[in-house]
Length: 465
Figure 1 (cartoon, one colour):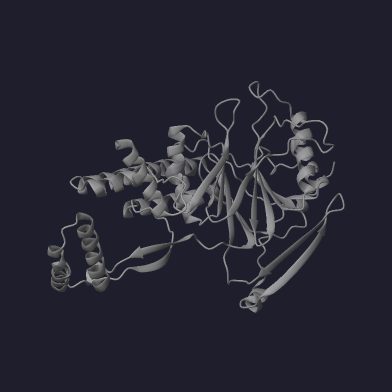
Figure 2 (tube, helix red, strand yellow):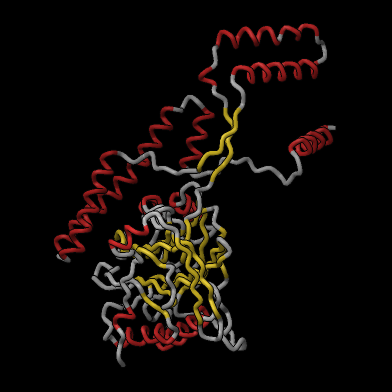
């Protein structure tokens, strides 16, 4: 069988040439693609390209080989790359496990949520995704029936997490896959995988959504003459699918982590192979859609530092002078509260402001940032030379930076705890931040705060009576 090498690896980052780029710098162009697909379906792709004027949606995937010992490293990648979707295969994390939930919180910055599927049959595996909270993102149930809608399909040869993103009136389907090699434990044959994978690709190719299929497929697609690779690429070619990644993604120099879309799709931009997180490298790409704005929230505040304390004392004394005329306790409390609020509003009126929810890693030290740059340089050198000595140097530096990152976070919170040990209120805030506890007070469902307060009062009154 003849393998079409150019159609297998398309190195197209969607960047126009030098002359074209200069002409389009400040232009806005709108394009509509009508793409016919098997089964008579037609997909209409509409997008507006304002070159260099808006950031695109950013997605990444990595096989973590256990996120339990790489939480801060994964968090760092999520923030450094400013990702909107971050898929992690072989996370080894289990929903509902308290220790694993803590790991998820360590990875997840402010403004992000997490969804996953567990491997139920044995330890390991599992796929998860960290995504921005303001995205309309849903974890779907993978297809469970064959195309004839008669024979139930039970996927045994791979793990699949199917998610859907809806934005700007369009749906995009993200299919993250992890395929382990056949073994006595999973008890499947390669012929089983080819049958299941072919059926799944046909299923997804017939849907009207834009599709992105990616993950650790465990095929050395950089060796297109291998029999198993030929069969795999033939399935892609039969379904008019295209594989982008053309660089090694594994420490042994093979391309195992893939990104697949329809051949006619133009949505993938700037795909690349990033840092080595485990024995796998992270792969990332942009999608030709406007990046959503970061989550915002309304906050109330007072400019207390601008208060003239002497004038405030005088006004408080004057406003509370009428307390001597009252003998009713409820009236006294009401006057006291209103007087203080009125006085405080005069000197520091309450203001409302919309702020962007940002996340930071305040524990990062200058020493760590220096060592991180060394790690990055050693990784580039290792990938360029492919020498064992450079590989070992990178591994040592990687371990050093990981240990330093954990030490930085530990020292940061130790210092905060020590500084606030005599202030219980601030100490609890520090502990909540260190343990990733939510600050919001959980109240029962209610229509108004007044009604809720009255219900509490009636409950305790009846209980005492």
